[in-house]
Image (tube, rainbow, N blue to C red; front, side, top):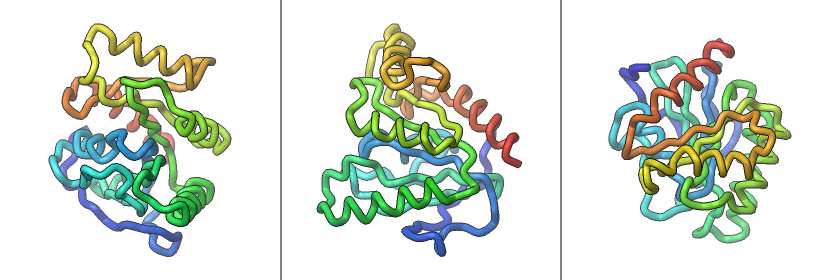
Length: 197
């Protein structure tokens, strides 16, 4: 897919601020430093549309990126929240849960995990939450450039076995540095966009 005119549209913390045009939404979830913003920039071939922070956990709103008036990439605050107070964590957690459980426009969740590490307890909690939501999703083992090329497929499969032992959830490697994986992810996204339009 060639993206021509992506734009940041709005940051939201409540339903009244969500876009109201009914476009399908591709939602990104993952821990605070897993690279969701870099994923967006890579997929749309832009360097700085989605702001990447040197401080994990700084994003505290739901960010909507309009992709050519066809769909949205929706970047949820990362979990882990290392810089947030307990009160802030509860507040952010509540509006994330509300969005995921009420938003009808969501057609696919992209769940990013770090290929260099075994899934954390928070990753397992998020996986279970997504499964219970009934929303279609895929798993991306991100930062594939950080390990040897010969180990990418094996390591990605190992993470899938931990999170998804049945093996029924598509699990793909990804790297913002090495864009060879982008086409496979676009194919998955386009499949779900076609189903929702």
